[in-house]
Length: 502
Image (cartoon, rainbow, N blue to C red):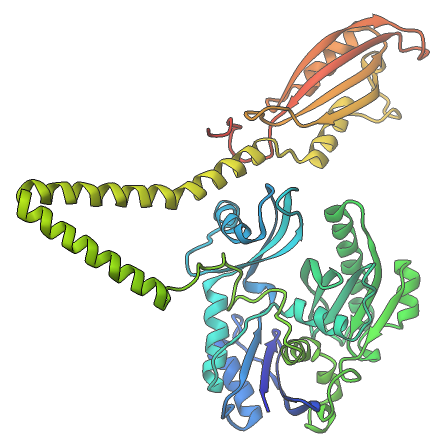
């Protein structure tokens, strides 16, 4: 009967659960929780965390076992990326290529995985990239080393709790749900649609000795997460909130639903755990924090891969291995080549050897050219995509401030320079070498002098403004001068805009 061992921890507690999975179902063989309290401000190392859990277990794990280690957000970087259309098997290389530009200090030892959100070979791709830094990988391995096991999978703790809730059937597949998993003084928040996680946060909370402050802080973080999801997905918003833990860990779900104006449900991981969990001597309070550990173990028992696994990251599929038929064909080709080379050597001696060397060099150069052809093509596609990548939300916010720097109620409002925007069209320039974006503006003003003042406010080094002339128009009382502006916007980048490479 296969055995599965899962571990996760926060700043105050480490948890472990061992389940046995077989044809008749799953059961909990062991469950442990150990305090990570320490006077060291830096906290405990991975070896010390593993030693605390080993002491609670009375030793390490013996025998064959599949081990999953859930890591928190402390050592994980996340980035929402937009990529050109590409087949699924090319996405891993494109994500790695783009991540080396956008992630800070992404070294060769960092584990990089991603969650596909949208797109395919015909439409632009959007992915949520996650990178576990070397310190996080080392910590996970040290925890396992202290317990006498090797990490087979390294999921993200917040995703594991969301998977547990989804497995229990509490997530409506047609709605965007926010799963909240509170710990002693922090909480994981994961927004997901079905099996896809679109947002992941870890936030600090007051400790349970301050229930009112903790409740207010949790409510505020839930609201901020809902706003972040709405901004990221543009056309979706959170339709339900699910809070993990016992009823005593948070306020009544009804009061939370009234505050948030969305349905709120409580999820008790103990009630959805296999048999045997409550008989292992772990306190009820600690069992309420087992959602992530149980989610990892039960997902492995169901043979469902974690949505993010830093031990087995997504990679381009390797070509078929060299088989027996290939070996025989290569051997025959080698014999023929050897006979031909010997014959030439006998006839031409030194000139023949020089010719063979030249042919080998040509083949090597052709192979190298083919190796880098795909990388060059992908780099050009990414550069062309980024060349017209404009953060329109930021640009519109800045545009509004420059059109009307002061409210109408201001005592010193420059009435003579006021203008009213009638139409605003945002577009991406056409052509292979297009750069940035374009605003086409139609507006009315009190006089032509106001147009000049508006143009001066819009020119800030990033925007290129040109006017299309103006005419008198009587459709807007007090604003008789109708005009148009053509504004060119630089792409969103820390570097000056450049045309894509050819």
